[in-house]
Length: 138
Image (cartoon, rainbow, N blue to C red; front, top):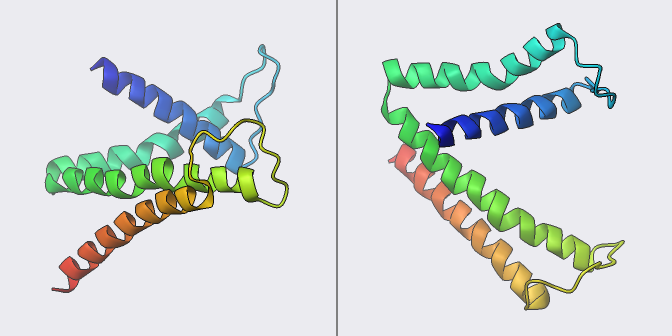
């Protein structure tokens, strides 16, 4: 219960701040001033209503939807966040137009190593996508 609660807190804070940045609802750096209640309500609704709606639908209409969502989050979300993006960020820091590495390389192998990491993540994403598309077609 505590793991789910802390995940929900982090998710809601992160997503509300994302929407605030996206829609230009700047928060004041002054600790005494908060966002207006209408803005808070809008931001929390944007962050929480879609997942609650999907969960409610999954519970009442299609319980297997939950497992499909978890499978897709693991395949696409995790591979992009922990496989593809770190390799691309390291590549940009090392070899980009304004490359000035501030620290010693943490991952050995140079360009080949980074390309292998990004290529591996991309290959798994591609294979999973191919599997899903072939499953729908056949």
